[in-house]
Amino acid sequence: MRRGNAVLLTFLGVLLIFPLSAPCGSSQMQPGGSENLTVFRKRGKLIELKIHDSGRALSVLPQQTIRVSLSENPTTGYRWQILENGSPVLKLANDTFQKSPSTGVGAGGTRVLEFHTETAGTATLRLGYARASDPASQKNEFVLHVQVAP
Image: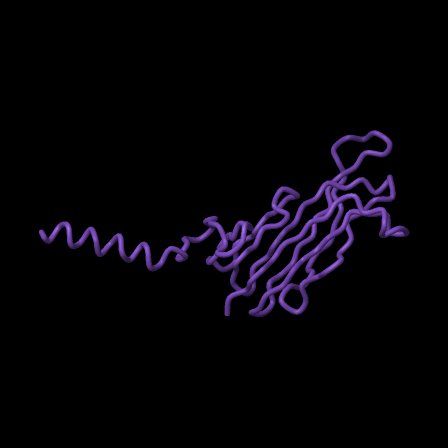
């Protein structure tokens, strides 16, 4: 076998052995599941998520911020509520409502929740969109699975 072929085969073998060594911010399928696993390995990076990211799994480092921005219309009585907060791995750092630029009566806006990754471990963040007085009225749900590496 020529030296060039041996080097190529060695390189391909390494790729087969280490397929999960994903670069920062890349997506790949989680082994044994259908969820997307997104890996963030850069400290201080703000991770921004929206409703279409529900069901994702993140692998992050401690001391990162995860921002979840979700449409909300509190004038209808519906608000995003924290059902599972991911403690002690995640800590709620900020919960704000940003009004829509529209000035019409009953205009909605965006609920912005920021969580800090505090300690190594696994957590589930679960948010429900319902009337505060009637949890059975839940219309939508946002779920995020977080693994914080040591």
